[in-house]
Image (tube, rainbow, N blue to C red; front, side, top):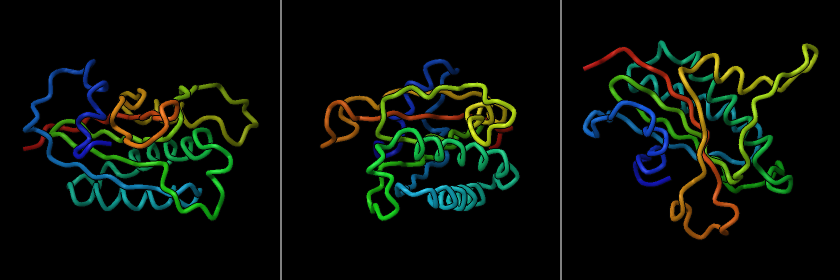
Length: 172
């Protein structure tokens, strides 16, 4: 993911107003194992990080989005043999990055497959994750991991980053 996440998030910023690099006020990364229990760990990491940044009031919306992005990565982006309960690898990463007026949650996984937002039937118990991400964040998107950001990984499986952006009130 790069040392500070700025390379990873460069495509995200292309459609946004220029961001002064000195305005980046926080960055935190968490590696997650290929187990569904990792969603709870991602939520705890998000709470701790937002509390440390003075953004505790944003926890509910951000944690919901983080939960959906991590769940999607575990459910749809991992080969079935990787998501075994005893797997000790950490193929999914959660990255939180804060500017004075923005917070970005980005989840990196090993798949290059595009996330697909679909309409779930009313009786379905799942299938609404990206709808929730879209509803609770100000914008979201995804991009493939650029060459060279995942050293040692086989070429076809460099992965992708799915991100969600939250606008914050201007803070000093």
